Length: 387
Image 1 (tube, rainbow, N blue to C red):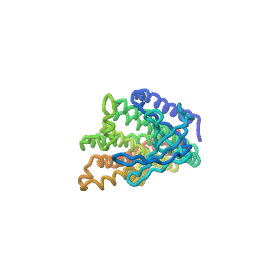
Image 2: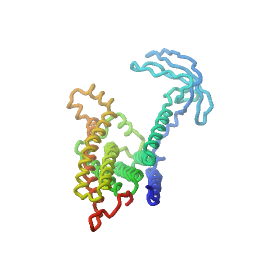
Image 3: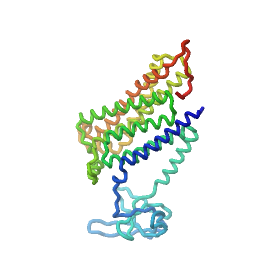
Image 4: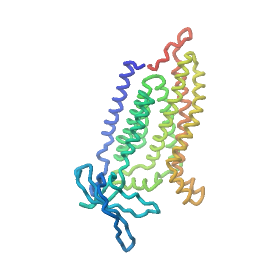
């Protein structure tokens, strides 16, 4: 049952989340760090007519391109019809689908009245899929589902409006990443579960797991002599026209703890929720019983979540893994390359964060859930969520 106090706190957490995003974005200096390419113009257009496929012979190659007319649907040129070209040559045996009438496409122009096909507009399908996801969350989760969507939005907003601009503005990546992680933990758990001992225990466990992961990452970052140059993308970041180059080693740190915070949060919330339910059904449970139950529950959650975390990292790097296995000569070379080392660090340190969050959450739950007893031994507080 929602009380007026819990509702006021819910609104206060939302106000805090919004204030953090506004102030954080201002401090990060987002506008000073974004680089715009004013030498080209990009628009979205709808294909109206296919003119035909043509070939042009060069001394070094023969090129095939499709010419079509498209109506621009946004910006200052909205409503204008332009002629554009699409390169339809095979690339390594893979041919891009030729545009057809009615397709929504992205066009770019590097000089007046000369337009080229860039890609198909695909985001609309993602919006539809996202809308279905939100509807299902609201259908099955009701108020909890709404809170989960809201907290996810705040977390994503913190990454894109505070963390990334802070990096580009030359702020301390180590400190900023930890702040964003703590913000995500507080906002997510309090919005979903409200203010209660269950939430406080979960937040404490999350803080402990994330801090442990951060310390381990710093130690391994120094011990392994990492440079942060693990791909061509890393080199591209170094070439950005910034006053101070981006600290690539700090980016590794940030990537590891941000990647681990979701899994650590899941474990801490699962343990605290299960132990609160145990305490609700058995109010006389002692410190030892609650702690032991938390450890036993944590073992099951830990096993599945660690597996999930490792498989998620493997799945996201599958293409890279295949390339390394094909091109690297020996297993020694493979497992000592910095790129593979960073992937292993993410999986291992994330899993260790889960391991360390488990006993801490169980310990805090045991202290909070068993602390109030009447003189006769009956629990003094009801199983209600509010503190």
